[in-house]
Length: 181
Image (cartoon, rainbow, N blue to C red):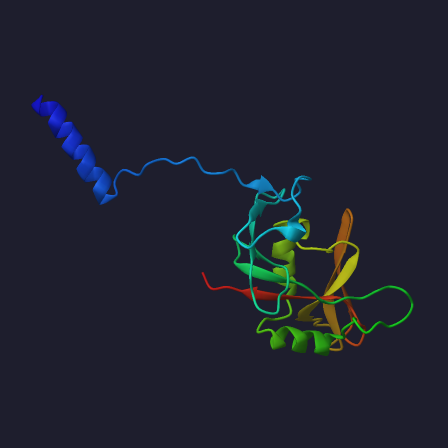
């Protein structure tokens, strides 16, 4: 009897001290590409995993619209701030490089660096962010071979690449905020 009491008291002490944690069933994080999920209406705090096994969370950040945070890098991505429409006409929504930089600074963020795009692409951010495919986005990285050009990211279904373009050409823009860990 004394041994049983000793075990019970030891268990209670260990539990209260935090050495033993109760196991709770955690809800499995769904894939971002699950057709039963509408990411556009996901509530703040909703999480999903990309095909690269990286978890993204829907977050709120002023000026970002539909914002998503990569929990691996702590990058928070905005919805499109400006968009290039390939109709042959220059649209009001298009943004040249200097205006893209200013637009991101206005919401206390920055234009993504080429390396941030590479990391996020590797993590599958295009599976989470709205309307990523079939578009070309400015980066803040100036091309070393010509200071009048900057790096851009082109994303299409099954195809993506980095290239350089004149900073006077209007392209689409997304802003990024790197939250400190």
